[in-house]
Amino acid sequence: METSNKKVALITGASSGIGEAFARRLGREGYDVVLVARRRSRLECLAAELRVQHGVEAEVLPADLTNPADVEWVERRICELADLEMLVNSAGFAVFGDFAELPVERWLELVHCHVIASVRFCHAALPHMLSRQRGGIITVSSIGGIVPKAKDATYCASKAYLNMFAQCLQRELRGTGVHVQALCPGFVTSEFHDDPQYAKYKIKERIPKFFWMTPDEVVDLSMKALHKDRAVFVPGFKNRVIVALSRSGFTDFLLRLMARLLKYKKV
Image (cartoon, rainbow, N blue to C red; front, side, top):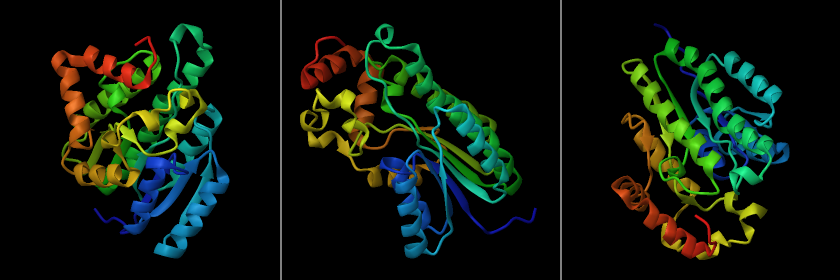
């Protein structure tokens, strides 16, 4: 089958953190990029930088993935990208609190951004990748999808869905040249924990520096693991130890330790 040598990547959540790091990495590797996030000004600055530094095409697509109309808009754009070779679903946020005490609409917005948008984008991207017999889909999950904890019920559950979705999809796609990964980082030095809902816990100050990874470190490990068909990939030895302890029945111990570090009572 004759295919184009052009490489295009679409990255959601590209205005900061892991999504931005993926955009920079893929631009450096010669991918033309489509940058998706809510903050147009940040996307435009990043796009201009990638054009100048790497000579790639960079398209800005402002969208709020809690909004069904915006998700459909991005989905249509993916369907138009015949040379799409990489899809990175990195957009996400947390709603932190007791499930029963917050409006159900907030939880559903989280599910729509993490799950509905990712599933629709994967479905839109796969026909192009399968026809080219190559491609990669990376969806940013979390060790929260493996280690359950209170006050994050919907967040953890949405990430667990993404993990299982990646594992099942990987089995379907064996031998097609398309690789799938649910990327499960732990603590990452991004804007995620700067959200006011976390402010009172001072997470960045209280969690030891040893546990933190930079977005670039996470992306580097993710890209190296993608073609090894590790459908659920936990970057960093320390994060894999946490997951192993959880799977060995030490979840309650880990949660008590976290509660002590963050000094809130209910876990």
